[in-house]
View 1 (cartoon, helix red, strand yellow):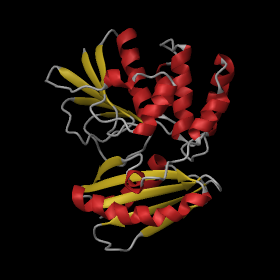
View 2: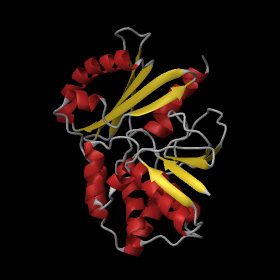
View 3: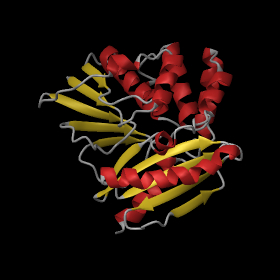
Amino acid sequence: MKLVIFGHENPDFDSIISGMLLENIYRKMYRYEADFVIPDEVLKDTAKLCNKYHVDYRRYQKKYELDEDIHSVLVDHSVDLRNIPSVIMAIDHHPTKQELPYLVKYCHTASTALLIYNMYKNIYKFSKQEINLVVAASYIDTLSLKSTKTTPSDIVECKNLIAKYDLNKDEMYLDGLSITDMSDIKACSLNGLKKYEINNNKVYSSYVQVTEDELNKIPLILKEIPRTMRNKGVDYFVFIVTNVSNMTTKSYLLSKNFGSSIEVMEYNHIASRGQEIIPELERKLMRK
């Protein structure tokens, strides 16, 4: 069987690790002709993490041509926005209420990499390096396991894997708490950009992780976002700010129909974009 594996646009660390793991599993265990493909640019912060963890993301950056004999699998997202033909499955840790014409393997867990590990750990022998990447992706995707997407079993599993394989927990913890470089306002407005299609609405979402001292730059970012919305024809834009000084989150919802008004939601915890914030918007838009 020929398979092409796709992460989401603007892939983050978890998306890249998930695609790489699935390619390894399909090739080594099932002998499939499988290729993980990154057709997009990899942003600077993600590239830096990949280099630190010895992940050669450049080998996956390639153009793709699909025909009727090639099937596709989505990782770390479930809704195809690229119009990829022959999607047969999606593996994701973000819930969706949308009905999709292919199988979706979903589980509430810290990272898609950890979901893939749990799907195959009894039948595929993961290397120590692969285990290290699974745990690192889980820390990095959850602000060091402090996000609401993290379950108690995730914490226990990561702790056990760290102990069993003698992994560097302190390094992963610091990488998970990475602070966004706020020197470039436009870049901040698109940091961690994800795109969604919800009930025929084009939705963008980005986020920053900041200390208390950098919160004064948020109004400047909120002024920048409407330009992107106009240029890209975006209906809704969700901008998420996580304050690592007090471990809280605030989300700002901008709409082409709101004018200059912004809908603000405050969370007294580190809220998960995929598990909490976007599903709330999805429920709202699906009712319309």
